[in-house]
Image (tube, rainbow, N blue to C red):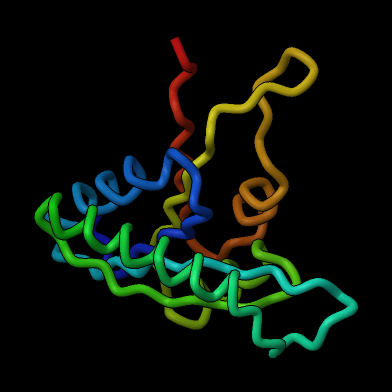
Amino acid sequence: MAYKLILVPLAGSAVDPDVVRLAVTIAKPSKAQIVGVHVIEVRWNMALDAVLEAELDKGETLLAAAAAVAQQAGGHMDTELLQAREASAAIIDTARERGADLVLMGMPYRKRLGRVSVGRTVEEVYLGAPCAVLAYRQEEPG
């Protein structure tokens, strides 16, 4: 399938570099644009446009590192830092607004109660996105 725009939500987890490299690989054949986003979740008791310096600095550092990984992999990734009440809603809205063909999400390997766990954000984006969603689950630590 030929993609035009791949949206890559980044959470700052260990799986992010793998997801960025996969996005570059998927984007190359059709020269798709890759957009990496990081969502700062703002608590309900704060103004949505509150200036959260520590989170902004962390988000900018995370996105810069992801863009560097994309460049090392032979691609280019635009980045955007978002603030929202819920990451999943911001990702879905961004995918819709930008006309994304694919949302490529990373899932760190996690077990809860003896079962592999899919996080709430991944599940909500998977169910609510207007386009294809591909979840890349990190391999089980050996």
